[in-house]
Image 1 (cartoon, one colour):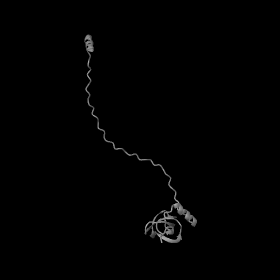
Image 2: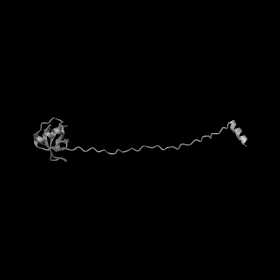
Image 3: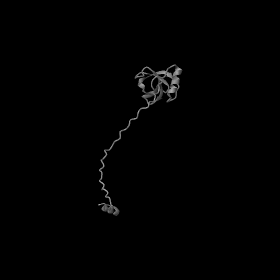
Image 4: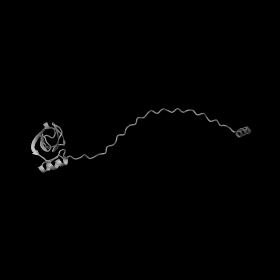
Length: 126
């Protein structure tokens, strides 16, 4: 009953009342649909099966489904991709460790060593 290419009408959810085609059978309770609806996984209880069958392969792309819908005179849902915008990057705050104050070690004062000549020169001045 639920086979690839089978036309259905969605009876529940946001896309209720819109026609779709089964693109893939996931398990006995879920199928992948596409068409006038959004391409998505759907519960078989939310679908009403129609007699029409479209020739598409399992896992057909959205473009293939659109072409088949145009042959039947139906309009498939075509969404536009959102324009890519560049967002400002968040700058991470760095964890700063508290800086310990460096203790200045007192340097011993350099004593001026006087040469013998300087000592004699000072004595002479006095």
